[in-house]
Image 1 (cartoon, rainbow, N blue to C red):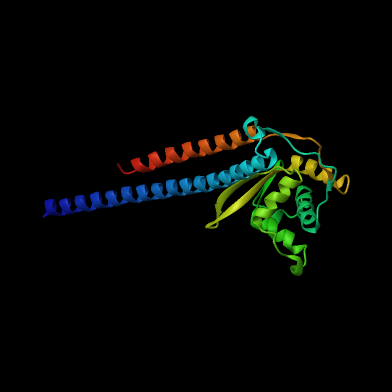
Image 2 (cartoon, rainbow, N blue to C red):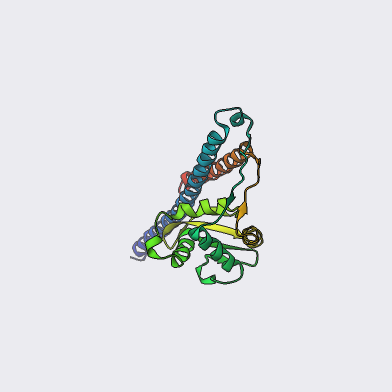
Length: 228
């Protein structure tokens, strides 16, 4: 009888051990799949940026050799870029954040940098503009405003509270420097004959994509080995 009970206990212990191993493997697989999903979303953003660069090259080069050489000189412009009401709202909010205000809207905040979701930044902008004038200002529009006024940021996709969101990461000092250029003269002069090395930018974006592809490939290999 004792031997019989011992055998049953052994089978139960073995079954529990097998279930525990399977559970750990399942959790590990889900974790890897989530990492792959986040990297793929980040890659999608970089691909969109790469597409925009290609479009700028075609527009700027007019089908000439600039497309091959990569160095394209922008046409001279005498007019100045003045922020409209919506753009001014974005600049003002970023300035307020750099001065230590609106901390509750931030995703992360340190002495050197701050991170804010595109949704949170857009929501703050909309608070300053009457609803009757709120049209056409989507999340992609925010990125165009930042680029227009030379405010550099790192943009990436992240899952927050179960939802995929775009996050902007700003260096506080660089952001303040860019904002000071705006506020120093109520308008922003466009540099004449500025040469932009689009080829270098495209190589940089391509390297980002290659790096993300390598990370995804390594994770996929790891995933295939879990449980084997």
